[in-house]
Image (cartoon, rainbow, N blue to C red):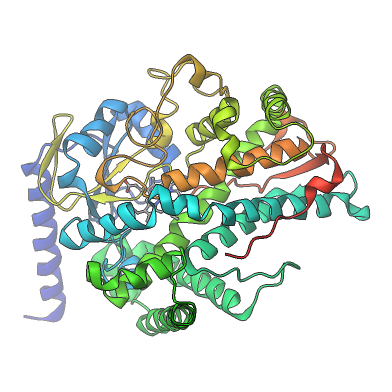
Length: 508
Ligand code: HEM
């Protein structure tokens, strides 16, 4: 047989198999797929909006073909419950692209691990050890230090002579808090000094993350059409080099911590110390420890900064809400001290502002991709083993069937009816639900609430001169996490005595 004939036969068998699959199952409806590309050419860049539009036409459960792989997207409360509660275990595997498979050593970490004994063990380490209330409390001084550092740097920015009355780039300040908080919590190090200068290890960490994103992003098209992959070969060398860099940096930091523990005789609370001291108890490989530490950086940095940026944009567009939150802060905290996390319980309106921000703008609107490890029925349709399943938590949180005036930013709605956001109420799922629910949810809620509280107590926020609130760009950037398309610029006017704008640094 000649080569073209062999190729034609392989393609024919492959297509016949796919056709058989489609006919065998009663799949959810969706836009008609084309041969080979499926729906790839239909999908708009901001995927969750595109899927929400399709749900209007085809219903709350749809099939979308990414080349030859089938993705199912559900967009209502009832179906989210079926996915994340009733069939939770069968849908708890992860879809791994070639890049995430390489970066996680085929799921040796937590985020990219399939559901199974390894996952259960590592998840237990997270729940019982890393994210226990005791450890969250022990690490609180880091969060408070970083939030006061943010206040100081915004104050310096907006009071600098040349900046008087001009707007600040809000994302820059939020990104620093998120980065410093997560790196200190995970690696026990602040890579940035008080002048804002990054040290060599910090530069290296940032370079590893951005190289990972770059080499991973270059593969997307071929991910979905396996037989096209020869045209987009995995850059084996680049992946290996970046993985080695990551391991070298992590090992150097781990050794520093081991040495410090030997010298001081006691362990600190950071994740790196916790994992090294628990390594034997839980039988954790070095790949797993390194994978977990980097999971925290990738899952916990952008998500927190994005949440606060969107909430601030809403507070600037809705001065009534901003003022009401400030009145609460003034009443509870006053003008002679700064807010701390112990004040949260007396600040119900501030907590609702954070929740309302996460409702309208969940930073991972399609959560992370789950994968079916068995054939499952959802909403009366078949979900074949191996398909990817997404819950459109963005669409659910704006569904007029379950929310009154869903597009309005109105924190008061949570006084009328308390709605849990940590996976118990399927109307509001910014952190997902079920066995893969975000383990960092409480940490994230504390940090987001604290950042918002400080931003509002210390400053009054308005749009840049000449920009009307209704003209602010509230559209999203495409991607797994959803940044604002136009980074938020705003004028910050200090509202407390100047001695309250100093960073309260702690060395832990
Ligand atoms: C506002 C901030 C955050 C939001 C909205 C958020 C949301 C999410 C969502 C939707 C998932 C996927 C759930 C699923 O697959 O069903 C997830 C997973 C995860 N998140 Fe978060 N997250 C946030 C912050 C954090 C932080 C601060 C950390 C850690 C420091 C963290 C660590 C993780 C990890 C390790 C996973 C993977 C869990 C697993 O696969 O079992 N997240 N997060």
